[in-house]
Image (cartoon, rainbow over all chains, first blue to last red; front, side):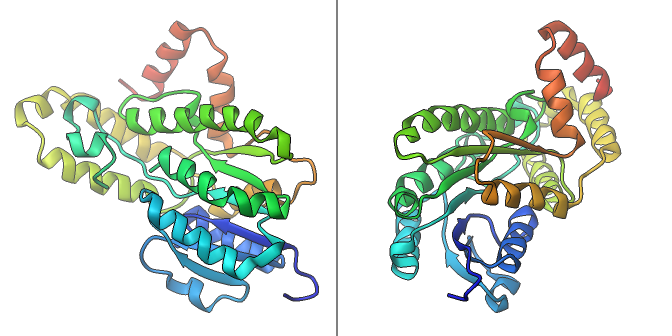
Length: 107
Length: 171
């Protein structure tokens, strides 16, 4: 850990949008960011202070595995923040939504 | 994903948060407080996330683990384009007779959302980073005009609020 390290953060949905911007900001600020990504880590892989962690937040086993991975690396310092950022916007009339969409099993 | 995802994550990561004196930050949405038509699933899942956060805050108070809700308004990211593409896909498989019933409403909402101003992603990220850093974080942060407007709307009587939303969307 660098001397100016502020601690460890885990964020979901880090690959794009708000998550990617927060990841960059906190890493620049001296945090070690465990960046939860669903599929592709993209540019996060090459960013200083960022450690991509594969995770599917809809799958409890995947989330548990991610926590184990972070615990192995963060050690006794633990986490300063868990940021639940991953999310989805489902739009359209309720009447026209499929059962899979409503139950969250379809993207 | 919006409600159960954070619940799974809290369960799995709490030992690490206890070890580090950490905090939970849940990214909600203004629709949690002001549900919007044609965004029922988003409104419901984010309202559930906000309610769960409020319950969790009291559960975790014993360990001084703050539970923070951040509400960003519409932000300049691809999530809205993704949502629109997914909605188009979904509507293409919907019953044509029922879809026709919503023609006028969907056109109005499309026009209204094209008019919608989005906040730059960096300003929203700054608010979330502030929630990470604050020695004594607030329970609730908003980012963007839309999220602050939701705060005002939420306090209005239901009838007034519904008329305003209907007019705002051109319905």
